[in-house]
Length: 93
Image (cartoon, rainbow, N blue to C red; front, side):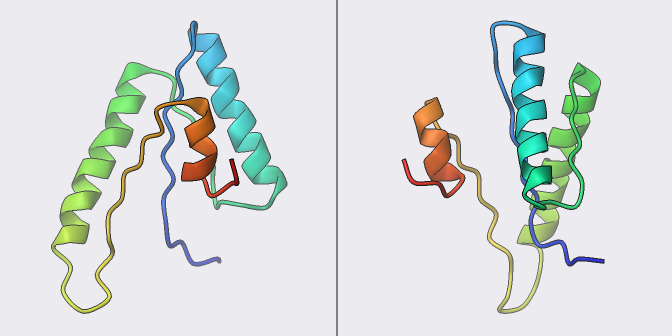
């Protein structure tokens, strides 16, 4: 089993739920096609989204409480435009 070292959480917006869902599904398909990621979970309902953000909030507290020199550094980057998303994801703009 591969070592999991990071979690990528992405929130998509669209004029409709279907548009936002299509964007999420396209990213998941692209990641899978490149062999990136252990699993690709999509949450479309309000309760599911709330659970995901609660996991992030709880995980942040655990990470900040770790001892030692190799303590993880939490990061949150939010691009303000679609063009900024490539820079956040490590692509050249």
